[in-house]
Length: 164
Image (cartoon, rainbow, N blue to C red; front, top):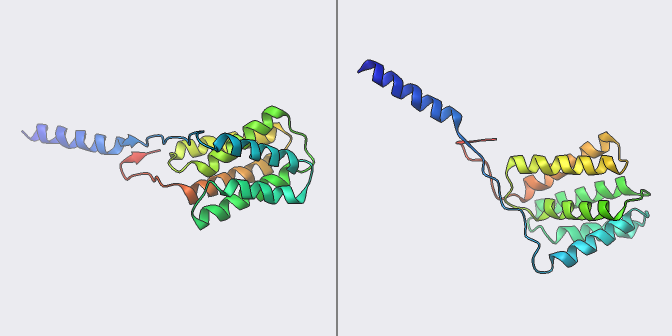
């Protein structure tokens, strides 16, 4: 009897320590006017690379439409400013512009991503920026801004029983 109780306690401890993996959230859908907004973001990014100061503001304005909370708007504007300063006078090909516009949209519009998905977004941003010639230090700063935006806009948090 005593051995059975010990086994049950060990099993309960093992199960509680193991926990469940945090489920992945749904990425935002490209429905409605999103394709048009992505095209606007792409054009804004193209203009930012030519060092047009007004286009930096246009990029921020086109990006904040996907956020609703004041903290999310402030974090999204900070991300936009950071990205704009890094891309000034850089030449980006069509693929890089499209990927960056889509990535920025995902960062601002996704409200239900897991911590693992946010880390993947940070890695994608870091990798994309370094591939177009941005220094590793600046790319890390932009990746940090991605985390700030997601922290401000996310509606999903890890529950006590979930692990990374």
